[in-house]
Image 1 (tube, rainbow, N blue to C red):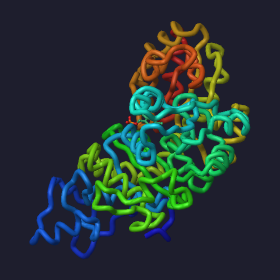
Image 2 (cartoon, rainbow, N blue to C red):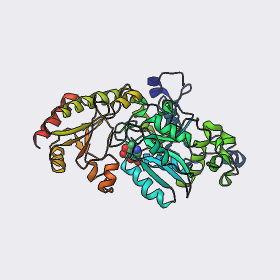
Image 3 (cartoon, rainbow, N blue to C red):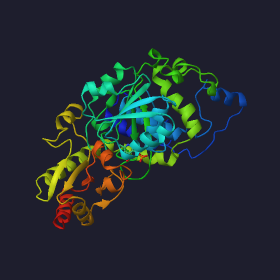
Image 4 (cartoon, rainbow, N blue to C red):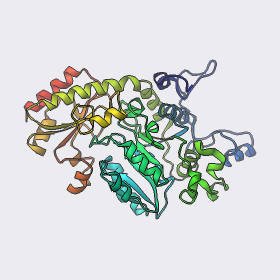
Length: 427
Ligand code: PLP
């Protein structure tokens, strides 16, 4: 299947029906699977054979969709989770324990920031947040002997900062730890982080992958390139026997290509249970079948909207990495030559009050806590997704108090611009 082009994999990847079998990925809506003998089931529990026994651990619908995303990212193994938040949590917790430390870009999604800075801190895992545009020396200085990973977003939500893959991957690898990248906004259509030094990719599939605001979901993909066995003291969970799973040593039994995801499935999914409903994975797959068609349209519409806003007298500033002259334009061209995403940030002259008047005047675009689906929507992050942050934290996350996040959909661009114009006239 993997010798097929990217576009064909969007449609056919992960599932190949046999003669007379359903052409669509079947929704296997069953918690459990029947076996003829308990020995057969025992071999599955011991991870000696692969097969299904309980949907919290694995389900055929979920696995087919995970395999498609794995192929699109160019990875060796992948798993789905019930949300992007679960994917972020698992990606770190799979290799970190109480007493460990992680270096993260400060410009990350507000929910991820809270997960790292508050909830995982309570679990004894500390994060150092660095300015994504810091010097290599400043980045280097953030590492500690107990650092186990580096985390960043390809295109940060909502700051729209583009990750300097070279700088972050070099620093991570020089310190013997993997680079974990949230590729939600770019999607593998526009960026394949494994080609730029990332080791693990995560997604909120809730966004462009699903693309229709149908189902919350997440995914984790392993490149299979990070050699855990070089650092057995740093990653004992992957390199020494797991007493909670019949003494299996994941790197020995599943190799570099399979160890990380098998451990995340066998331990974290078993214990935390953030499995997606098969129905949601089915819906995600329907979205994936048109990802390669939708992303270029999102990008073209967003660029047109960014140019329109930039030239508008009532707009104070515009940020869009695909816009010539943008702070991240050159870096975006390096890592995403075919386009970035459909999200544009801007400020309306007059600050917060003007932003509220503008948003209230929109008709086609809705005010929604969402980005990256077919319908245009807007949000004021400082009073919603990022409201838990103080002003200093907002600044570090690249969120100005007047920032309006516009997620440009795939409607006709003429209608989108007319809506923006009408709403700006109300300011
Ligand atoms: N990562 C990014 C970049 C996001 O934008 C989001 C949600 O907005 C998440 C992760 C969390 O994903 P979910 O809402 O699917 O849990």
